[in-house]
Length: 212
View 1: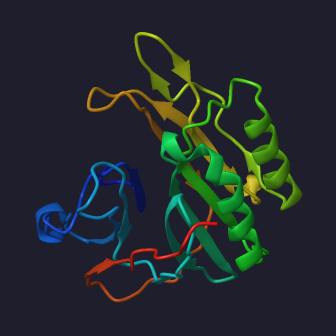
View 2: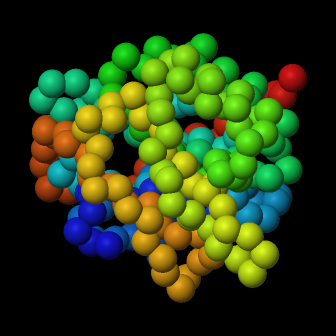
């Protein structure tokens, strides 16, 4: 895992009672977006090599959990948007994705990824609507192997959307024993600008947007 420049995690279950110092990895910046201490589950985290120049744009969604980072390269900015869509809020995700595209124009390479809790193998109105919306904005879904396997189901719920397909290679779904979700690994061709060799912990501000 230490050979990766960026590591994205969903459903961390972290909250304010879990100090970031307990989860630091040497030479990485830890970005966190906790759900909060009032409810269990959820939470997002991104580990980023401390040599990569980055910014943390604030993206405010209603129900879908979201953590973003902007990677500065020699030629462009690259956006990584990590999301977690709780199963109980599937009715909100279309509103949140529409809000995302209304708030920002993603002309630069963009990667929207995470646990969507929507099985990409099954046809459904919600799946079709999300696919149409992503395609409208030039993003395509890349994961074709099952990412969650239980006794009762085999699904593709961990998705990767991008408007820069040519930059992505060696995408693989890797099974492991620590979760019933498999890891999705891929390479992105980005010539990054490197920052001085230091690291710090940053925590994204908690979204406080009232739902419709």
